[in-house]
Amino acid sequence: MAIHNAIQVSCPICATKVSWIPEQRFKPFCSERCKMIDLGDWATEAHKIPCESSDLDQDDEAL
Ligand SMILES: [Zn+2]
Image (tube, rainbow, N blue to C red; front, side, top):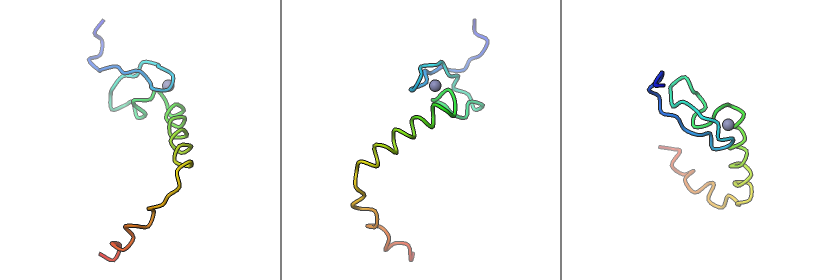
């Protein structure tokens, strides 16, 4: 059954098998939808944490 040599991974969101190939733009996700779901989780997590150090490195911009 070795039609493709591509490694397959499971989508972290819905566990669909995803071929690890350049054409699979959303890997390791199966689709843009699952990628956006994951990014949404990240954004939600980030929203809980105050950005205390957001401008610590701003002084280096003059370089
Ligand atoms: Zn998925």
